[in-house]
Length: 90
Image 1 (cartoon, rainbow, N blue to C red):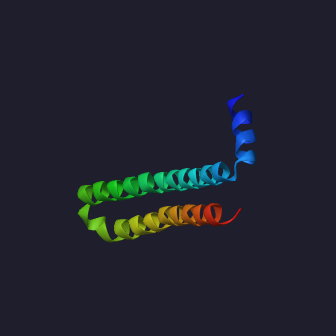
Image 2: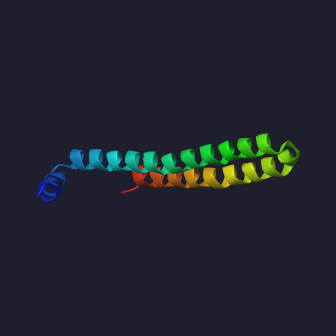
């Protein structure tokens, strides 16, 4: 019920529609940044544990940690691109 009333009001009021679109874009980027942030924390936390347990494997573990960081950060960058697209188009 509330969604249909909000949709009717948003169509009738362009300022409200723009505000809801910006709110949606901000929420989308916030959620898109949350996952990679947690993932990066897990990657480096596990890398520190691995190096602490076996210091002789520090080189390969560090390389794999940076690879995991790059892959997780790519997701955050994709989320940022989606945020820009939602904010400035439509």
